[in-house]
Amino acid sequence: MTPARDSDATDRDAADLDGDFGFAEPSTDQSFENALAKARDGSRLSVDDAIELLATGTDADGIDPIRKEQVLELADRRRRETVGDEVTFVANLNNNVTTACNTGCLFCNFKDSAHAFEADSDADHAGFTKTPAESRAIVEDALDMGVYEVCSVSGLHPALALNEEHHEILRSYDDPESAVNYKPPARYATDPGTYLEQIEAMSVGGIHVHSMTPEEAYHAARGTDWEYETVYRELADAGLDSAPGTAAEILVDEVRDVICPGKIRTGDWVDAMEGAMAAGLDTTATMMYGHVETVAHRAEHLGVIRDLQDRTGQITEFVPLSFIHQNTPLYRHGVVESGPSRDEDELVVAVARLFLDNVDHVQASWVKSGDAHGLKLLNCGADDFMGTILSEEITKRAGGEYGEYRSFDDYVEMITAIGRVPVERSTDYRSRRRIDPDDGPHGPRLGPRADGTPMLSDRSNEGPAPDGDSASADD
Image (cartoon, rainbow, N blue to C red; front, side, top):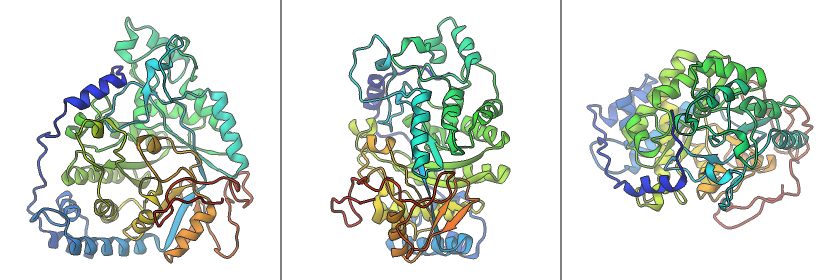
């Protein structure tokens, strides 16, 4: 079971790390040229091939710029052959329920110590916990703006349980706090409700609810012998439509032992994903890279994703997540000096396109990369450009600088500027609408209350403009 850990413990753990973890450097008997030839021919790449392409050859240190461009060119061609020139995006809202968490991940600055949320605590914190009623009100307001997806990823609040039966099971432990990371809702200033209540609250007006990561599913089953499929079926009955494959970080346990020792192992992540799929849910898959892992670990991670998709076919998109380092314990204690370079970002997207031959869609992130670099990634193999988001809390609290919101007009302007076709899509990509750039102003039309009206027309977006200057977008 995942033990309770506070933020001080997280900092102490990070401070104890010396940055030398004994990870093997990439070693392969495959040459870069052989891997490139296989990619050019459309042959399925091996993990060793992926290592070669991610490293631009293991025969020399550093990224070779000429070889890198060869990989990017092939990936962009593969993207064009697979999905064409459309760039998709979604009208969505983030509604994260709580920042309360005791897991102690060393890459995270989203969480606040759960102890600070207790009713008798006088600890200062900037976190939040929303009741189901508050979540419902947020989603209702978003529906009126034309939003049709709500994405919810939250901390592992000790009082959150799947349902009332789960509360009873957790209370039955002799020492539930240490045994199963549980304290009853009455201990806290705000009762977060149950997972089922939160999902049901957000599932209103025909909106698509995208929530319950493998880590959250583990939390929703802790202390029981419930199968992941059972948990996800109950969540689906409450209104869950799809599950995000986040909490993946790097799916290699020696890496997880360093950056998130309190989280589920690689095998548990895969089991949870398969449970969600067995319950009939589509999923996404992610990789959070650029911290302590090597390119070999990145390649192994891609291998886990591809194998899972071979067995299930229910991963709709792959989402590379560039590590944002500024406010994290790993950076504060000198374990890492920065996140990945832009060259690394480009190669991860490109190799994902070439290696994941069974996943159609690869996402570029303006939240992580900004507009200009995000657009560059769309020419490295990516074909999706995230969504409107409205409120982004996880990357921002880690030190992200690129704002929390993009309008449809922003998307149309950026996508057409690189000669691609802007397309509004549903979460599962099954509904799509090409947008005429000349028929503005632009707003969502796929949502149950969407009529093409621009979203939040009087809201400005803070963050650097594509040229790096500070600017506002009049949306």
